[in-house]
Length: 348
Image (cartoon, rainbow, N blue to C red; front, side, top):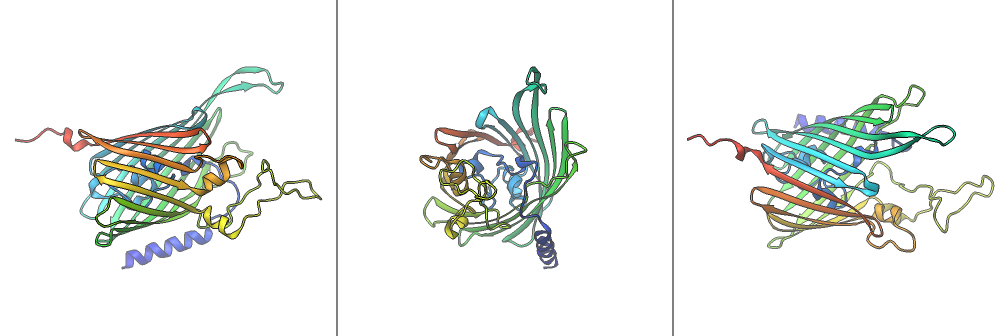
């Protein structure tokens, strides 16, 4: 009981001091790291299995089933941006488990020019994340966890580093086939700035909550996820809107004027899974904020929708996820996981 009280007090105090507005650096710290997360709309903090990649999003999902399991993921994102992730899970004892995660984000090569615009070469830009997660089982139904992360960013000659933590909780009721997840994400600090003249920037803080329910005697599982709970109004200045409003005195485009319902929906992600077995699942998701902000006003098409599947092939679990960011343009994720303990030699 004392552990739970300490966890809640710490969570409440961190929420009260967290920044809820302004821009931040290290936006890659919010990117999903697995084909399953992509298929479910970009955030998945409530359901878990043997894949240690689940602990990257919510450390409370790290569990003993992940012992000696490893996961590798690759994403071909928009504009030929490439992501890669690796995760490994390990059980410490009957109530503790941990995961190790590493990721890279390669943005490709860029043309280097001088002040006159003449081409003088090329440069690249890359981000890295290193993360260690630990979970503790409090009761048969409640697990808490924490991630510690180190973020490393290199853009040409500009280098920046930061550290952060995630605090997560998970409640599972097997009898009711219901799970609840809660996460305080990216409480952090920038250690090294991109330049001595630049201000110290925050990392992208977020508070998320999720609930899932599986139907009895049915493969369907439904999940509702809420994100950006620390900031009610997610509107922004859309200079490309057809019906944009301009301040007559300053000539500056005004912030979007959203209805109550639209503001609420921009916190919502819906997804569903068809769980035919542990070795075959089909998934689909809907991210309203992604659809509202990235889709053209006159033709949103599949923007905001995502889908994917996972299938067991021999001892491998292979996953695919696709997310629509713009009509006709999608991000594709591929993942593979395996239990490495099967590689150990059998002792006669």
